[in-house]
Image 1: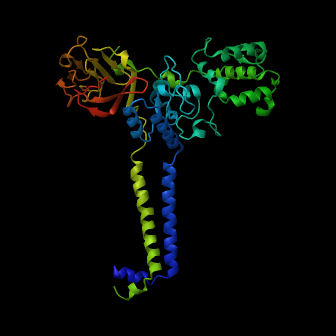
Image 2: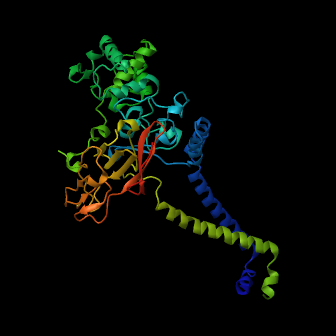
Image 3: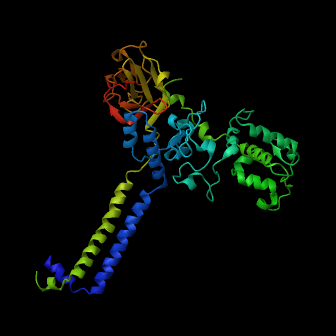
Length: 272
Length: 163
Ligand code: FES
């Protein structure tokens, strides 16, 4: 001990200061990175949800359970990992009956028969970035994420790929289709083999562009988003009509592969 | 403790102490962080908490076989029990349990198609190469009234989830 102290005292004072300063910086950077890793947006939402849960608890038991639940990572794995949705980390009330009329992000999701959440996940219909755990990223409203959250009526487009027919809960697809025919789009565009050849084939239009904003913009000023396009502008249509047309465009895609894989293989179950 | 100590002024001492403590933090911290890295927050190996249907959907005496989730749900007089459908021998999926509805677990039988291990309704091995019985899992109820099986928590085969 005395030996090392003795040595220390021969080190110039400036070096000691430098050593202390550098070490403190290194330690602070490390602690900062730990804090940044810990302090995530979703923890705040889970805390708020817990408080609401305690408020709404009917029995003492429920209250205790709510109080004792900690921050949780949660995800829905769709079709063995084809999609991984972590939306439920913030949207905690999705399946909770007590949150029927709560506001987002805790609102309860209406139950859709035959579409259990644990099998379908969220992004198959809503789009967005399932794996992300911060609001902006998860909603996919960031550069380079091609599937932003579908808000409002645009969500109806997601029914299209699997339910090609007229769905009473997705009237905008039908309406868009009608507008498509009425406005003569067919003269230039082809869908499933029917239509003109001047414009691009739209059979899978919804796979190429998944952002409703792009479609609306494109209908209003085609050349603005697609320079050199020969398409006339459709800005004279009513905004609702543009929305319906967009929903129809977005619905033109193949069924998500995540859902095609969902059935178990018979060999694995021992049943024929 | 000789002359050297005297020259160690309080300020120098403090700076050195601070320096060494921070140095250790910045050295040990990343080591611990790397250890933490070995325990991921989530894995992609399928869900460990399985949500089944509403409690009332399962009538007393019924045994439901979930081929996709690889579990078996027993609805008995005393409540619910759930066990894995994966054979402890080489992880084949066993056949559904057979036995009259409402039969005692002792006379229920399930077999593994791969090497013929036989299990009774308590998960016990009656024959075949299986080294141990079937695991039974902890059951809870979700807020919306559905059966939730937590495959991370193994419980005694006799433990029931009472309603
Ligand atoms: S895997 Fe079941 S008996 Fe071998």
